[in-house]
Length: 497
Image 1 (cartoon, one colour):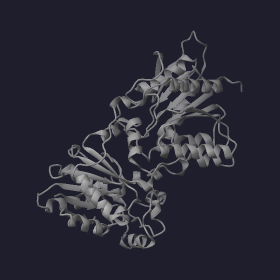
Image 2 (tube, rainbow, N blue to C red):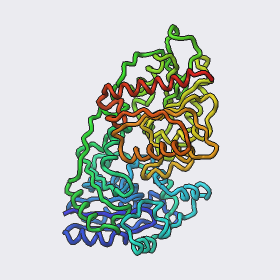
Image 3 (cartoon, rainbow, N blue to C red):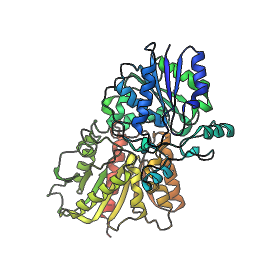
Image 4 (tube, one colour):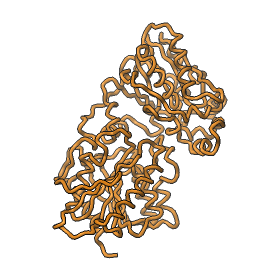
């Protein structure tokens, strides 16, 4: 039978696992809850060492399964990286996929914690939530008032450096099989994960590895309290190698596949992070209007090819140049959920570079934003300059998804649209009819706000299109939608002032 090392999220300790550990032991498995160090000076390395000490104390018999809940996936991955020969499986229990160099703070949804760690000198303990505050950290569905009181009673302050120190991985544990247990009350489902694999950056493709299995629990973020029996059963099944597998062709990534329209190569000029694709001089006389394409994300910093060299964005930019406008693509630095401010700065800089180019008509600029870059639209909705003639959004994420609280209130397009002084530029929204429910809900929230504020939005629907439909089995319907969106944006750029 398997032996489980159980590590819980922030503020909690090994006592949180008491019922789950009992069920596992009753099944014949070993169960060892871990209490991570709570001393004020503890950091992520301290917690990695806590997990390592327990691993090293166990007899090497049976399969060793490390379970990391929430924050605890960081020390679990750190320990597995140093003892890969001892670990048979890693279970991500309602936890993220941190990479080398990531901090746990990037996935902390509670903005008060971010503010605390920004304003303090880094030594202030993060206070635990009260019974009415746990929902800031995850869904509390399934927890009675008594269970919330128990959760608070077991809680203690979190040492700040456990959240701010980066995870260090050598890659030694990359081959260890993994399982993901998703608590669906928080909004994350296997279908959503599969959509991210199909349409997101290439790093998500690893989730389609046959060694990765997925499970769902219809409960909130603390299943060890809300459904310990079901959680124990799922952990046993995960240890046995069960779980739903994702099968996604690698060429479905928008960074790897081919564009759906014929897009002949155009003269390209590189300026910093921005590439300009220019119309033929015979097609029109410059200066030309311009469209800046903003890729989705987050994407890893070492992504190859970078978005501006990927067929997807090359296709959009070249087609724009073929219509008589400059098609520009920016490689912005949205590498994680805490990078939206940096990405916003990159886009502002790219727009200034674009407008300063003598081949560009600085008075006629459009911004075209895709997918996970959708929150960046908030700035341009709230305070658009006069030269921004159009803001286009293609299958955008327009409100934080589950676990995206770290992006901060600045990057919420819906409140920006509802602001009393909002005067957004003309909006062009392309929707995928087969969008994942979580993303579709953010778009619905945005369109409802537009109706209530009487903000015109030109909507182009692709009824049978998925997120990233330009790559996924292109159809006449999707080709027509992209062509219509381009013509609509260009019409705004050429319309008299």
